[in-house]
Each structure stands twice: as structure tokens, then as C-alpha cells.
Length: 212
Image (cartoon, rainbow, N blue to C red; front, side, top):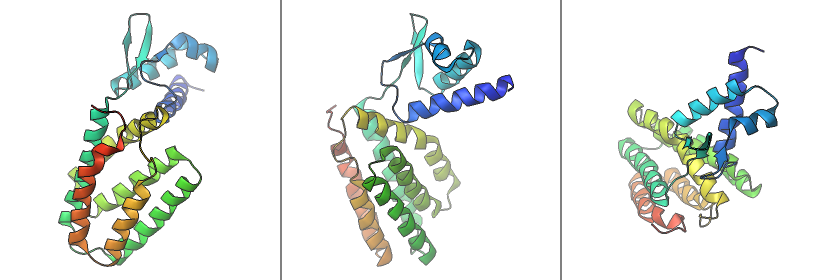
């Protein structure tokens, strides 16, 4: 295996751990400990940790290790509000929900429900962001789509950390919200869907049990 391939595998492994909330905020991580765990040299681990630090997952620690960066509850609230705002903008640019869009939305919603029933919150979050992406894609606005792609991973990681730390009220409540949206789409009630999204933006602060 080449050095680049080894680095890629290490990076993928560590990023997956971060995304799943495996490492908690302020937890120290050292390349030495990871080298022993993975039974590989420290160079590819250091490269991966540097890349993760550039993405905002890690910060320097004076004890020759890295500290896991978490999120302040206010950051979580602001990101949730922003993602809902992208949905709102997308709905404002939509004329009427196309039948194919409604069908795809329904299929995606069933996946979301399945992940909820299986209590697989990480996969649930991916299905949830797939629903976000489906709505935003209807706008045809590449800037909004790119913005969503930029914040998709932080959105998932924030929720996973909040879930693991017990900061979330009703972590699967989005099913009810997006089921209501589906009904509005099916009935071609786009104006009501826009108003409903605005209500969700106003309610997003209640999702996190830690006050700011």
C-alpha cells in the first residue's frame, strides 16, 4: 500500500469517528496512541490529523497532542436556523411541487422513518440531510446547493455530539415536521409550506436543552 493510500484510509477512519461523535469535545488525541491502536507509523496519522485540524475538528494542545473541538449550543442553534433558511429560500423560488419531486420526497421520508425505527441516529441524520438536499435542489440555485454541501457535515456532527451528550430534545422529531411538509406538498399548498418552515425556524432554539 502506498503512503497516499495509507493516509487516505487513516483520514477516512478518523473523519468517520469524528462525524459519529466517537471523540467528545476537549478529549485529547495523540498520534502516538493512534499509532499503537492502528499498528501503523505515525506519519500518515499526523497528516490525517493536520487535515482534520484544518477542517475545524481539532486544535493544538501543549502536551504534544490534539484536543477535539466541540460546538457551543448557540452555534448549533444558528446552524439549524441557517439550514431551515435555505429550505425557506428554496420554497420561495419554487412554483408548484412537481409530481416527481413529491414522489422522491416520499421515498426519502420513508428511509428517514426506517432509520428512526431502527434507532440509527447517524444514518437518520444522513437521510435527513438528503431531504434537505432534495428540497434545495428544486431551487436550481447552485450557490444555495454549494452552501448546503459546505455545512452538511458540521450539521451532522453537531447533532451527533449533542445526541451523545444528551443535549437534544426528541432527536427524531424531524419525522413529524417533514411528514407535515409532505402533506402540504401533496396538496400543492406551497404558501402554507413556506409559513410552516418559518415556524420551524422560530422553534429551532427549543431543540437543544442546553441554554445559551
